[in-house]
Length: 463
Image 1 (spheres, rainbow, N blue to C red):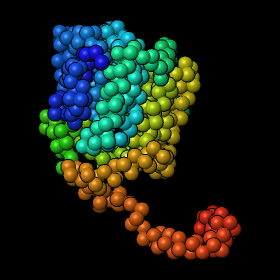
Image 2: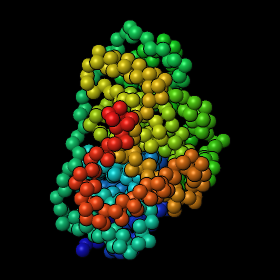
Image 3: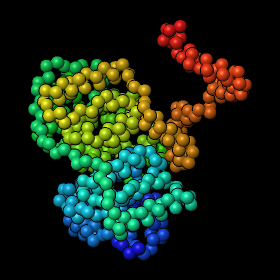
Image 4: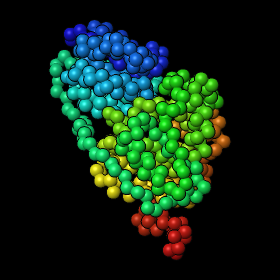
């Protein structure tokens, strides 16, 4: 195997102290003939954003590389906000050609909580850049301690190096996003919706007044008979993204507390609101990195469902409907938070009257569902995600996530099935009875369907 130069784009804000980088170091130890040069992208994002030479140096390394490894922890169902910002800078500086044709792969570490969303995002970005994406490898944070998992990691790296050497063909997983331009022209709101005493907050990152997002926000707020508060993320004093330091894990106190205004804003504006509407534009394959900073920084709440009972809406300009993974992940996350996304309204339909109608209906539904405290039952993704968090907080994450453990314990979130002693007793009795052939035949062949619905029939009035 020929010696290669691989540029590792480190997405962790912790730089060399990243868990993910230990996996990269292991790969380097297994394949010492290759140069794996680590560039601490997220940790140095301010420099890359404001210093042309610093950003240019990274791009020169990319151009000279035989392969690119995107390596990152999973933050809030995606890559960290600083990493997202770097990807935006690639397009803003017009250096897409530096990545075109490069072989690439992605490596992440996490607790497998929506890690697929993060890998799909990177895969799609690589497809947009014309890169040759081989595959992604999603490691659990402690997999490196397991010999079998180390072997899988080594094979992943070997396959990546082999694809580069052999110039192997790679398939595209994601089609280009449509670039249609439509100017939304809102009509008047002829009917008004009463807020019914509900605190409604619209949060946006849009700086330009003459955009579809701004016009959709205006039309949405005009649907109400009261004035609706609209806040811009750019007006909030946010010093930076989540650092991954876990200082908040003990008592939900963020390391940025008293250093910027994010926590105060979240406590005074986000938590009291019964209805939240997030408004923004698609930037590459997600909302903007500024939105990602907002979402990442909310992690000071750890895994406590602080959005419980809230009704949410999203107003988005751009091809959100072409990004089902984004909608899926956000929906599942807020279901885990015991909240509900009522709808995603976009300008994709290209019809101003239809958008007016959708925004008017969103206003009406948000208030009605809030008044009724209507929260739909969670689906598979949120139920599965909730169990991942429950099991890990109870187990190996109890330390350092002491605040989570205390909340979960005091609020019945440790709903392990083995604690249902009535079911355990019934299961034991029925298991023993079914070892008898004629009883098993009677139950499975004749009575199973009737017995399954019998307790439900009482409630449904079908007795």
